[in-house]
Image 1 (cartoon, helix red, strand yellow):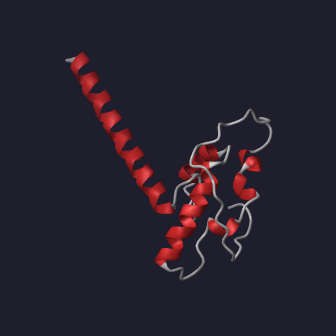
Image 2: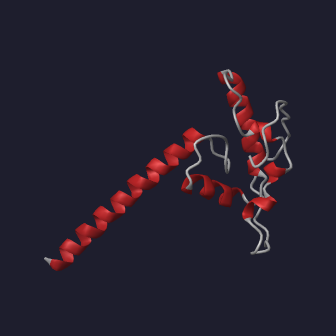
Image 3: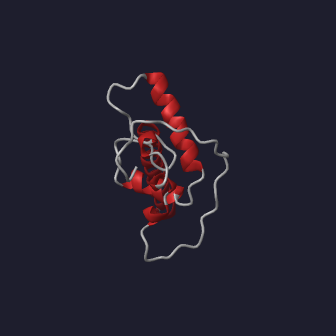
Length: 124
């Protein structure tokens, strides 16, 4: 993600469990510990005209890399706040991030609506 994409694909056998976040130097940016800085960056971004089966395979391989990353949560939040329109960030594809953002917006609206209803009940 933070390096130019490579053309070759390497699929690592990575356990599906999340590695706990270590205590990090608070002055260093989160991405200095990103596993993708050391792995095959081509996994995280689609080449032009990539066939669907190849894209799905590449995205799953990227997600396996993300699953062992100590800064996966920070990476995901970065991609959701930017929002990053391409690639796998924090274990989510661009389409998955759009779903998460839509759910967050819907939840915020529900919370505001509930707060207004509660304020109306207390006032009336």
